[in-house]
Structures are given as structure tokens and as C-alpha cells.
Length: 214
Image 1 (tube, rainbow, N blue to C red):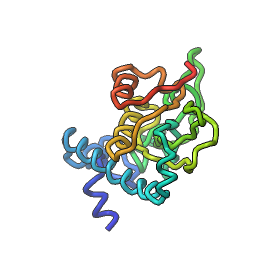
Image 2 (tube, rainbow, N blue to C red):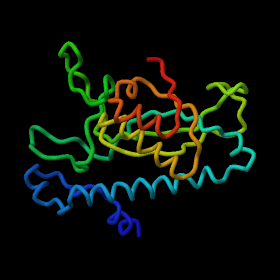
Image 3 (tube, helix red, strand yellow):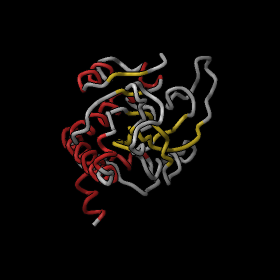
Image 4 (cartoon, rainbow, N blue to C red):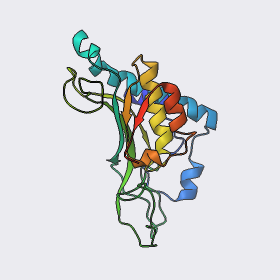
């Protein structure tokens, strides 16, 4: 049943669980147009966040009332059960949808600003996660006066370091589509450096007030 569901929502045309040369990998790829891939990705986002939403719906009415829409947004590495591609053997990773996760920078650069090689730590995906946050009695961010647990409201997965701003907006739109009101949103500098059209402006259009240190 899982594989039947996955066949309808997998946005990737690439075959899995094979360590083969890149040319063979591309030759075995399923015929999938960009629009069809985007439709599957949207369906996958909706399915995963609908499942996730069931934990939030277990909260009591009073707990839900105390939530004023404040959110913490961040991304975290999700190591895959796959080795990365091999330059010596010329083979692809057995999970070709991943990417090298780099601890520093934007998590995908192979060199720092001085040209020094960074250390690759994992062949992975990156999860962008939006979590409920607490708010003080006067309505400002922080504190622990709210009566709700800090549950995850939404998430999406992507290759490490690829369009953090766009992924954040995908998650926040999913949250908005499920009827949660916007409030303060705290984010780090991965989002402050995003192109305004990809993050800041759509964030404002969704009704969020952005809180950052930069």
C-alpha cells in the first residue's frame, strides 16, 4: 500500500537503490514532465502535512485558543541510507535525490570564502520545519506563558541548501491553507539573505511579522 501511494506522489523520475553510472541512471529515468513533477510535489506536500496535522488536532480547545500564530522556522539535515556518488567508480548514489550536506555556509558550498575545502558530513536531504512558538503575556515573542505545546505545524524536504526561502514559503502556505492564523515568525540568517521575492514579500502577503537578528 505504501508503494502504491508513493507511486502517485513521488516527484522524482530517478530510479532508487541502484549504484550505476550517471548515463545509465538518466536512461532509466521515468518520463516525467516538469509540470507533472510539480503536481506530484504539491500532492506530496499536502499529504505529509495533513498527516502531521493530526497531532495538532489532538490539542484541547483551550490549548488551540492560546496559540496566536507565532512560528519558529528552520532547516535540519536528514541523512539518507545511501552513500554519495563515487568519483573513483563513476557511480551515482543509491538515492540520487540527495545532495552533500555541508555544516557551514548555506549547507551546500564546497569551499569557504577563502577557497578552503569544507568537510562533507553527509549525503542527505534537508527538512524545512515550522514549529509553534511561545509568546509573552504582552503579545511579544518569547517566554513560556502560552498554554499550548510547541508542535510542528508543517515541513517539506529538499536537497541541502536549495532555495531555503522558497521552501519556507511552501511550508507556511501549507499552514495557512489549513486554517492557522499568522503571527510572529522567527528565522535565522539563511532566510534573511533570501531574495525578497522568494521569501520576505510572500511572507508579508501571508500576514506574518518577521523577527530576525539581521
